[in-house]
Length: 593
Image (tube, rainbow, N blue to C red; front, top):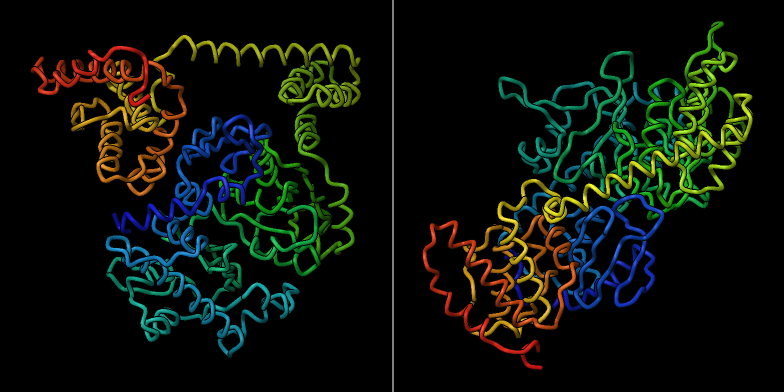
């Protein structure tokens, strides 16, 4: 363990999972557990469960689970050591000196310090003689100095090693600069600045750390935009540019755009609720991040085919989520006798703030946008096209969860295609029956294939021996439910388990039992990968009766030993006598009752 076990045990005791999770998720008690909307995926019906007695959480939708440390690791995108430090700070505990992960934590802290100093260097360069070209570019883009300061903008000088020399003089190593993605290495091993002669846009996370950089070239050379690569402190799937500022907005929603400079222009115009993804389509991780600050999103992507595709993908991710979603479609701009695409930056400059405010107020919801895209594919003056339109639009409307929505949008579709409302309603009902029928068949196939239900979600964790694995799962549930059932030496060896993961968990839990520590899953966060912890949490969510527990224990051990004997060629197990002793126990009472 990187941290002393006594420290971790006290940290878990002070970090009640209901209190910690409750600061992120609104929880409602249902029986012994609490439920809420999962923060890890989009949903409208709460399938996220918190078990106070076991100090674990589990989502029956996305199948993620674990203890309080796992929750912070997932929600805050932190490593195990950093999640421990996060919780320790929350609990007012001083973190002892680590033994194993101290170096990893130090490297992460160094990269964050390096990014901060690099941002300061670029900012100072923008103010000096070397920043003249960038200042002129900002003037042409109508970006005011106060706005540039608010976003911490800077200038990368037009040289090969300006930042490299400045940062090494501050004591940073070349390896740290490489790790931060601020320099690159050519085939000859020479290092040079990644960003040169560019406008620099620091990417600041919601905690206020500079985690990466975006940049824009000053002329027409390529690549026009260049961002930091993935680093130990930066994952583009988990960050939104401008959210550190937008989270403070008084507006009721957040506008999601494509480009960083769109965000700058919108904030300057008073739309301080705008954010942008960093060179990627909207991700589930980003929606989880947004859900902390708003429940209403406005999609404002470019009005070209790529922007419409990005809008459609975002709507698919957000479908069925707790977000209220609207789409702001920017009109094409007339230039030199032709209509050309424009982004939010263009629209604000050519049409003005008030025009954008009107568009924002009249933006359509996601269903209306998708219906418009479908209608645009057909010539509705043609009878055959109207038939084909009716089929496609019915499939879309049938996917809506509310019968009221299906009724309203069905009527609109019928009116647009000049089809009787009853005929359209019938077509939608047929499409809805097809969808529900297909879903029932899928569920039935799963129910008729119990082996598929038993198998872990992750292929790397799949069971080779289902009979033994079921017994191994039951054994773990009993151990967590009542460790008093287990007397004397361990009844099984780790290698007797058919599943390496289940055997490992048994060993760790038994070790905790022998050391007099709580036998809980929450304490295993530092020993298991996220997928492993989620699977073990799912295992422990399954019911296990306290009645006849001693007999069940004996049966489980017997099955595991029997299957282990088969794998080893029938060698008699030296612990068979221990198994027989369990089987000889009479009555269905739990030990000690």
